[in-house]
Length: 271
Image (cartoon, rainbow, N blue to C red; front, side, top):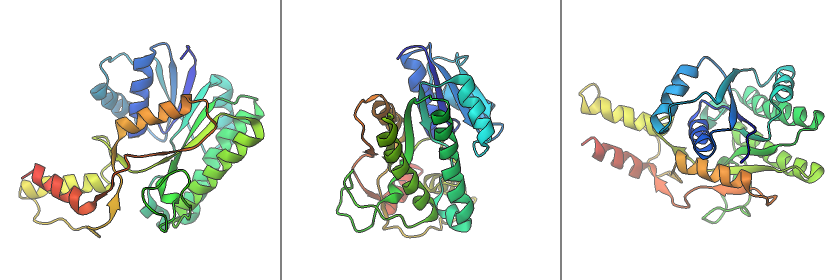
């Protein structure tokens, strides 16, 4: 990679953290611009320091911006002229999308459209990675799932993600744009928020261990998921973005584990 500007939307999430560390460890001359939805700069830099051997983060600029505001997005693209974009921002909870389906869908679509339309209008077509989701797949598929599996989104979140997935295909064919989607399965790390399943299990196990609770309440234990480590997923994201093939890819371990296995492992760890 040469010295150029890279844009990472939603940089303060776990994927943005690992991507930032890997990009700067490969080439310290890169300038990363990361968009945030709030005042999370101190927490982000603190978390980045945990996984990075180099605590010099002067090449990272955090930008507080409303990605739903097209004028703000157009100015950002014009100012930094990115040669690479990793689009990770937007609602990420399937459960929350049922509570407010209209807002969820409009947010996911408007953010993507604002970024891509700004690039097109300014004739800047950077290498572009779009974070898609395994939630878009049909439940009727044979396992394991792959790039040729059937889609049938069943939640407002998945419906919006599927629309964006198809939009990346359209833009790629229309403009010869190196824009791709990574259809990602579940991935976890120590930076997951408390509202995610894995952290709910861990935190409740700690409370039980310390005597502050006596049980964990959870839904189906038989539900099977493909869980990976977020650091490995970041490697895949970079490889896909740098690859010259005009294709979308599934990102996962290919191995399923039940929630029961996850609970058992966590409870065993905390004895």
